[in-house]
Amino acid sequence: MMLGKVTRTLVQSPGRLGAVRYKASLGIAREVGPESRLKTIDDLAGPSQLESLYWVFLRGYLFHIQELQARQKKKYGPIWKATIGHYQMVNIACPEILETLLKQEGKYPMRADMLLWKEHRDLRGHSYGPLTEQGHRWQKLRSVLNSKMLKPTDAVCYTDSLNQVIPDLLNRIREMRTESPSGFVVQNVASTMHKFAFESICTILFETRLGCLDRQIPEGTHKFIKALIVMLENEIVVEKLPKWSATWLPFRGRFIESFDTIFTYGIKLIDMKLEDIEGRLQRGDDQGGAYLTYLLTSGNLDLKDVYGVMPELLLAGVDTTSNTLTWALYLLAKHPEIQLSLYEEVVKVIPGKKVPSSEDLSKMPLLKAVIKETLRLYPVVPINARVIVDKEVVLGGYTFPKNTLFVLCHYVMSRDETNFPEPDRFLPQRWLRSLGIKHHPFSSIPFGFGVRGCLGRRVAELEMHLSLSQLIKAFQVIPDPEMGEVGTKNRTILVSDKPINLQFIDRQ
Image (cartoon, rainbow, N blue to C red; front, top):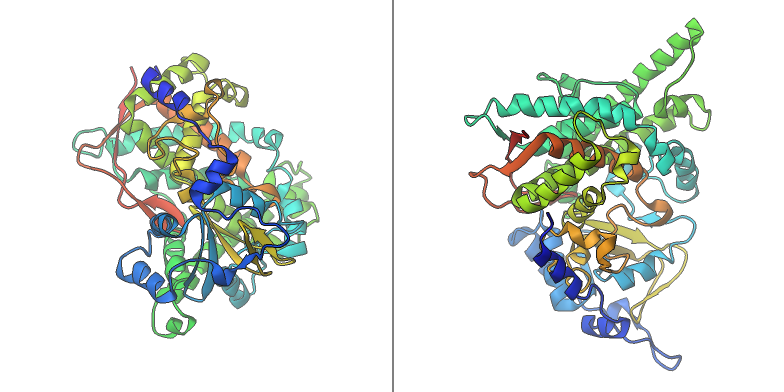
């Protein structure tokens, strides 16, 4: 069961200092009176552009920006400026300041302008989707997409569909481990979880099974998954380079080509669903269906809009669950006492051959705590951004003009010891209500905040809870002794810096 020593450590360590002491410890400017002059962005500390380029390209932090931000926070404080490539930005690594910023967003919260993604859409004549659209058009699009997705009651409707995919994941793990010399090791767990997540999200979005967990997956599916990885890795390089480099470096071309593959595959699935709907209409059959059928038949979006929306939903749906599940299994393998506690909780709620329902999940607080702690340590998107376009913003004694680019350092904030004692330790217990451990509500927000928060949060949580409970019920998970320690790599999404290999031992 959960270790008493761990619990005592959490209870005895304050989760949050008093507001005044906390702000003083971070060096945030005190509240200023009318007679005081607010400082401007020019007064804000931060590295020079040359220094930033040195750390990013010469010191190897290109794919480890979140670690560079942790270094910079120690040097410059919880808010600092930096210029990388053609972006001048203000970095925020303090939950109090972050809360102040996000609560000033207004009706149409603005992400950083995703210029590279928009460049591809414009080049190919595609409509923008929920990640690229902004302003009133984003709000209109999002209001349509929220239906059948955002509410917990909407997500529950997908329980049966997900529970049909999960047994295929368990069987695929059993097949893969037999291919190892020991008969227990699954190589590159993230790859398998990507295929599971892709099969799951396509089951929900496109209302179809694609065979991603078969021994031989369809060629188009394999190309899509590879294109997703290539696109994200090249995006993070292109963002840091000047625009003129596109003519003689290959990164922008690879980015465009991989996005072409993603859109081609998404459009193919949409067209297949259109043929299915037309066939049912001709036969006079009930339309039935779920998400894609709703988008195609409701009249709220035209076909071009649907073509633009679905690839972005696919992108968001695959990485969120696959990477979190991979990290969760890795952490549980490294902490067998927590894994045992979780196993005992799971078999108590879903004994024998019982398949978990959405109601069962509410009875497994440790299961939910494991996912929350995994997302704290390894947020899917370690760095996000916002732009306030309609007014000046005052933060921490500084005033910033309209259209300032604010970078939200989620990875750094979620590993700050002020809110999370022993921040680098895997301690799911810190999320259990029975312990009463408090932290600032903006210190870990892996699904974002407010109306621009993650559209698929409820579905992602349902998918992760259902699958992890059945994985731990079926297998004892142990690290591959030859793997060693695993670090992080930021390719826009936070992934492992080397393959995670785990042993899956059948439970008796």
